Image (cartoon, rainbow, N blue to C red; front, side, top):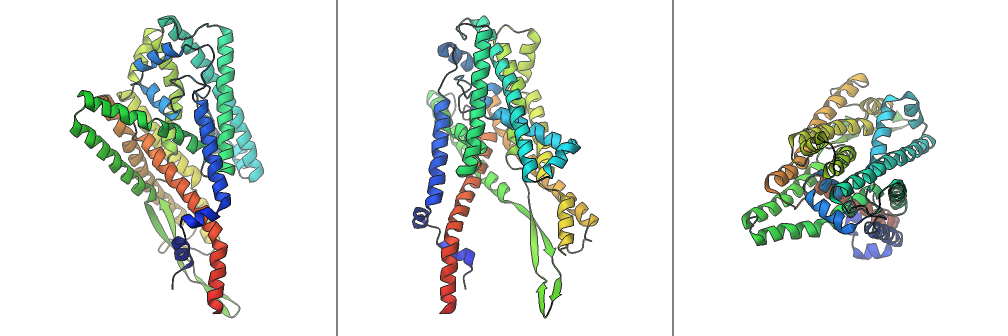
Length: 447
C-alpha cells in the first residue's frame, strides 16, 4: 500500500500548482521584488561620467574587482545606487556571529528566543549602516583618485560628491536589506541569497557570449570551449551530489511500558551533511575580501603610492596571495558556521533526555565526542570540496584569460540557491495538498 508521502509525490503536478493560490502570490511577489532590484542596478550615481568609468573598469576587469562586480550583477562596474549590493549586510552578519560566540552577553541574548533574536538583528542592521558608510566613503575617495589619474571619472569632486555618494550607496544597501527580508517573509526562498543569485544569473548571457566571441576570433580553440562547458556541467553534478550527501548516524530508542501498551523501540537516523555550512563560506570569504580589494583596486588605478599598486597586483585574480587568503577564509568559515548551526553537546543532551542513544556509544559526553569527531571529519571534506570548487575557475581565468566566470563560487551559489528555492516551493505544494490527501485516506479507510 502506498504511503502518504508517495501519494503526495504522485499528486505533485501543474494542476496542483494552479490550485495553490497562496504559493502563486509568493512567487509573483518574489519575481516582482527581483525585477525592482535589477532595475536599481541601472540607476547611476550622481556626478559620474559613465563612459570614462566603463573604460577604467575594462582595464581592471580581470582582477578581483571583476568578481566583486559579478556578485553585484554589474552594478559596481556601472557605479549605480546598488553598487555595494547586499555585501555590507553579510559582513555585518559575520561580525555579529563571531561576537555571539565570544561575547557572553550576546550569547545569553541569543538564548532568549525570539526577543533576543530581534535585538541581535537590530544590532546587525546598525553595524550594516556603519560598514556601508565606510565602504561608500572609500569608493568615493577611490573614484576621485581615478579621476585625478585619468581626468574624467568624477565630473566634479569634493566633499559634496563624497556626501552624496555615501548617502546614495548607504540608502541602496539598506533598501536591498529590507527587500531581502520582505522576500523571505512574503515570497519564496531566502531573500538575501536570491538577490545575489539574480545578480550572477543576469551576467550569464554576456559571459557566454564573450566566451563564444573568443572562439570565433581564434583566441580560444573550439575543443577548449567545449571542454569548458563540459567541465561546468560536471561541476554542477558534483555540487548537487555533495550538497545532498549525508552521513547517517543510527539512533536507537528503547521500548517503554505505558500502562498496558508498549511504545518506542524504533530505530531512526541523525543526518549529518558533508557540507553543513552550505554556500555561506564562499560568500563570507568574498565579502571579507571585497572591502580591501575594492579600495586597493581603485587606489591603484589612480595616482596612489607604489606599495598600493604592488599590493593590488599580489591580490589580483589567480595570484598566490589571493588564492591562499581565499582558501584560508573558506576553511575558517566552513568550520565556524558548522559550529554555529550544529552543537554536538546539545544534540547529545537532547538524545539522552529522550532516551535515544547511538549503538555502541554511551549517552552523554561520549556521544557528544563521537558526534564532534564525525562532524569534524565531514567538515574537512566539505571545506576541501568548497575550496576546490572555488579555486578551479580562478586558476582557469588567470592561466587562460577565460571570461566565462560562471563557475566555482558563482555556480555553487546558483545551484545551491536553486535547490533550496525549489525545495521550499515543493514544501508549500505539499502543505497545500496535505489536507485533501488526508480526507481521501479517511474515505478509503471507511470503505
